[in-house]
Image: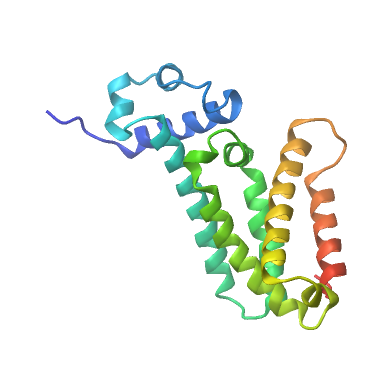
Length: 195
């Protein structure tokens, strides 16, 4: 007889696993840990997911998809690259920064299961198209090849995520707002546009 599925149980498993993966690490978290924290029987976990690798994939894919969908919906309101950059900097990134567990998992040991390279490629293409439209004839646009500009976006994005994670989890003395101010100053300086 098949077990019945409930969205509440599925969400509980995902939220609990997300917290455990972020706190203990993916490899240090067992299905037994998930069972203990959720209070669900082990069979319930396997009713929803084949294994913890599938759980982490779903956490990342659904979290990323949710953020990306909202970003794309916001982009529909404008064709102006400057406005799109503002949406990216003032809505998408701060929303991503609120999910420290997602950032920790994205940057952590479960990277093999999260398809980070696909997410970075998608984000890089988006940011590259905005930067290219913003840059026009700026020195930045003329001095970097497409490959170099893509590498810069990836390095910068991952660096921002690491910086936010450190700012939120250690007493290093900078805030998320400080990081975003530096990002805006850098973009303004490199692109020659005020954002």
